[in-house]
Length: 313
Length: 300
Image (cartoon, rainbow over all chains, first blue to last red; front, side, top):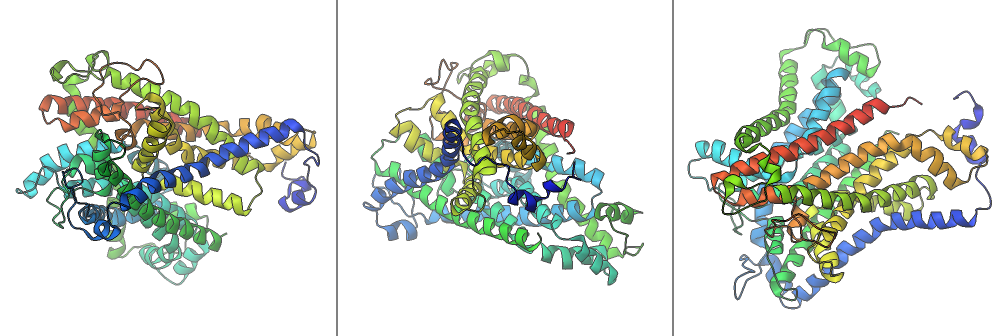
C-alpha cells in the first residue's frame, strides 16, 4: 500500500481528491458538525457567564478588598463576613501537602517507566497506575477519613482532629500521581534516543543520563505535568469535603480541620439557599476565583506542552 | 537486575553503550524510582482490601434490593442509588456521545487545520478537560437547574455531566480518527464518495474500537463523579427509583457520601459495601476498555 507514490502527504495536498462543488445535504451536515464543535465553546461561555454575573452583584454588596483581604469567612451567619483568606489558606495548605507527595513520586514513577522498565513490565505497570486515576474521588475521601486518619494518623499524632488537612492532602497527593507520571513520561518519551546515546558514549551511567540529560531535555513537559497536577489539587472537592472538615480557619497547622474554596462551594451549594441571597452569590464569587486560578494554571500547562512538542518534532 | 542493559537497549533500539556494572548510587537510585512507582499501586491495593473487608458483612443482595434508610441501617440498601446512576448515565451517554463524536469529526476531518478558530477551539477543549468538576456544578446550578428551570432532576444532572465528559470524548475520538491512515480516505474520495460519505462510511467505522475505548473511560468518569451533583440536589434523601427524566434522583457516589457523613458504624460498613459495588462496576468498565483496545489494535 505504502509503495504507491500518490500517498505521500505533500503530493496529496497538491492533487486534492476532494470535490470542488459540494452538495446541499453535505452543507447541512457540515453545519451540524460545526454546531457540535461549538458546544464546547458555548460551555466555556456558559461557565464564565454563570460565575461572573452573580459575582458582579456580589461585589456590589461586598467590597472587593473585604473579600480578598478579609480574614473571617462566615457567610451563613446572620451578619456574615466575607473574607476569603481562610478558604485560600486551607486550599494552599492541602495543595502543598498533596504536591509534596505527588511531585517526587510522580516524577520518580515517570523516570522508572520511561528509562528503566522493560516493555513488558511497562505494559503491566502503566495501566495499573492509571487505574488509580479511575478511582472516584468520593472513595478517596472515605479512605482518607476512615483509614488514613482513624487508623494511621491517630497513632502517629495523638492530638489530631478527626477532620484534618493532613489526611486530605496525603490522599490527594496519591490521587494526582498518575496525572503527573503519565504526562511527564510522555515528555520523556519524546526525548530523542540520540541524546541518551550521546550521554552513554561520554561514559555517563544510567542515573546520570536520566538526571542530567533526559529530565532537563523534557523539562517543559515535566513542568506542564506539575502545573496540571497542582491545578487538579486546587479543584478537587470530595476528598476535602469528607476528610478536611467544613470549618474555615486561617491556620497553617495541618493537624486541624480546614475548609477550602471547593468544599465551601460544595457545602453551601448543597444547602437550600434562596437565589437572590448574598450567601447564594458568595458561592459564585468563590467559584469565580477558583475558575480563574485553575484557568491560569491550565493555560500555562497547555503552552508548555506545546513548546516541547515543537522542539522535538 | 543482573542484565538491565539488554532490556532497555532493546527499548531504544540502539546498541548499548553502557558499562555492564552499575555503581551503588545507581542501584539506590533505581530502587528509589521503583518505590515511588509502587506507592500508588500499594495504596490502591490497601484501599481495595480495606473497603472489601469492612464492607463484607453487607455485600449481599439486600444491598441492591433494599432502599436507603436512616432509622434501620442494618437493613438499608442502595437500590435507589443504583437505578439513579443508570438513569443519569443513560441520559449522559445520550447527550455526550453524539455531540462529542460529531465535534471530533468536525475538528479532525472538516475544519481547516491551524486556522485561528480551530486553535482557539483546541485550547478551549484542553482547558475544559482540566476545569474542576465543581465548577461544572455551578454551571449546572445556574443554567440548567435555575435558568432553564429543570430543577433538581435526572435531566439536569445528565446535561451537566455530559458537558463535563465532552472534552474527554472529543479528545479520545480525535485520537482514534487520527490513527486511521490517509489512504483509506483518499481511496474513498477517489471512488467518487463525498467528504461526508467518506467520513461516515470509511473513517468513522475504522475508528470505532478507539472511540469505544475512550467513550467507556469517559462514562466511567461520569459514574464516579459526585462533586457537581452536590449542587444539583442529589443530596436530598431519596428512597425511590427515578420515574422519568424530570424525577428526583440519587447516585452511587452521592449515596456513599451521605453514608460517610453519618458516623454510625453500620453506615460506614454500608458505605464500604457500596464502594465495593461501585469499584467492581468501574473496574469492569476499565477492563472492557483495555480489552477492546488490545483485541482490535489494527496494524495498518
